[in-house]
Length: 437
Ligand code: UDP
Image 1 (cartoon, helix red, strand yellow):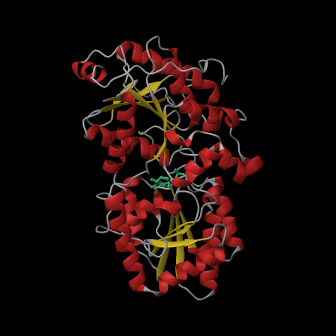
Image 2: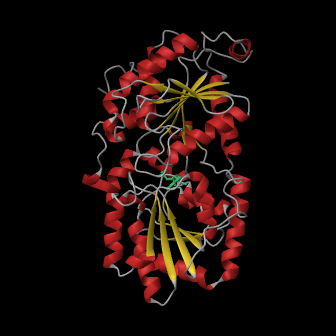
Image 3: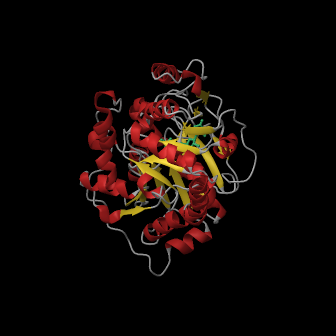
C-alpha cells in the first residue's frame, strides 16, 4: 500500500528528548519503518525547519521523508505553526499531483490533520481516506495547564473538526477514547493501537552506566512541567530523609544545553529547596542509542506526569527489564500493570511515589520479577511490528472501499479495482479552505 504520513512539527529525522521533539517523532519514525518492512511504501511529509535540508531524504528501505516549505525554514515552536498549515497542505497536494497520490493518509497531531484533510480535499479526484492520530488532546491540556497552555485558541474547535472529518482515528490509549467521546467525536470509528518499542534495542542485557550510590531512580522525557519531574524530586527528598542512599538521574531537556536550559534551572531550584540538590543529576538530552545503558543502570524508572496521552518511556524501561513507578493517568494505566510490571500511584502524590519506590528498593525479588514481566509484556504486546500490523488493518479497511483514481502502478490498479471495492460517498461537509486561517 502507498501510505502518506503527515507530521508537521515532528520529523522522524529529528533528535528527540527536547521540548517539541519526543514521542511523536519516535512513533512516526518507527511506525513508518515497520510498515515498510511489511512491504508498504511510506512517504513522510514534514515541515522544512532548516534551509539546509534536502527536499527528499531516504529513511531506510521503503521510507522517504519529504520536507515541505511552509513558513520560514527555521525552527518554529509548534504552538506558532497553525498559520502555515494551508501552505503545508498545498505542498503535500502538489507532491501527490506530480508523483501520484497515496492510497491512505495518516496524520499525526491536530495540525497535521488539518493539512492532510486540506490536501485531500483540494484534489479533483475522489477522496483519499485520512486516518488520524491525535497524540495529545487540547481539551486535556487545557484542563491541566489552564492559562499556561500556549496552544492557539482555534485548537478548541479545529481539533474536534479534524476528529469529525477523519475517516478513522487511531487512538493510542483507552483513556483517549473516553476523551474523544467527551469531544462528541463518534467513537465507532476509533481503534486503539498503542505505541511500541524495539525490544532488541531496549533490552535487558548489555552495557549499563555505573553508579556511585546504592539506588538509582531514572526519569526520561521532554522537560516540560507537565511531565511532573518535581514530584519525582519530592519523592527522592522523602526517601533520602528516610535514610535511603539514592539518586535521581533526569534525562531530557527543554531545548539547548543542560547548562542553559531554563526548565533544568527551575528543577535544580526545586531540588535545592528540597535539600537534595546533590542527589539529582541532570544529563540534558540523551540520544536514543545511549538510552538503554541508562535504563539498565536504574533500580526503578519513575513517570509522574500530570497527564500522559500514551508514554513510550515506560515501554522502554520495561524492555530493559526495569520496573516502573507511574502515576495512574492516561496511557500509563494501559501499559504499566500494577503489581505486575510496576507500581501505579495516584497522580500528584509524592508520598505514594516515595512509598512505591521504597518498596522496590527493599525487595530485590519483587524488582526482578516486575522487570522480567515488563520485558515479556513489551515483547509480546508492544513491538512496532504489531503496531504496524494493527495500523495497516485500519488503513486496509478504508482503502479497500475507497478507490483512488490517479494511481497508475499495477499493484495500485489491482488494489483499486478489487471486486469488493465500492465508491465512497462524497463528504457532505464543506471543504476546509479558510477554516483554519
Ligand atoms: N527521549 C530521548 N532522549 C531524551 C529524552 C527522551 O530520546 O533525552 C525519548 C524517549 O526515549 C521517548 C521519547 O523521547 O522515546 C518520549 O516519548 P514519550 O511518549 O514518553 O513522551 P512524549 O514526548 O510523547 O510526551
